[in-house]
Length: 184
Image (cartoon, rainbow, N blue to C red):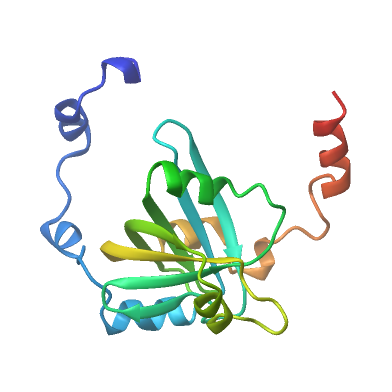
């Protein structure tokens, strides 16, 4: 059966239902455990969509760079990068976002879903300055769902186990890949 013929009902026949506690772990706000996780995370993946295409963008800065404004809102300073601004453009088109936060050496992850808005007020952006880097905009996310995700995938992948890491870089350099992809 191809995925175009797949139904939710058929998927439930194949996989069954989640344990009630797995469904119940999703909360509609950020409690003290979510706050602690996010404040200790130096890295997350930010997923956005324009309603058709998807984008997942890595975001990183020192732990605490994503600010828990209150139990229903996150603030994400958008630091200058490569100026593609795919995620920002997507937010303008379709403000639903998803995030997955990671903490080095911690197998569990924190997932947060919500609705984003872009703020360009210079006074607000200045509050989130890091060193000499003032964000041009900040993203404010109204949290709709938050939940801890078990650490099975990072554990199985050996993500935080140095013995599983390659001894040498296993892929070409960024420069080599960039050159190959841009010289058509």
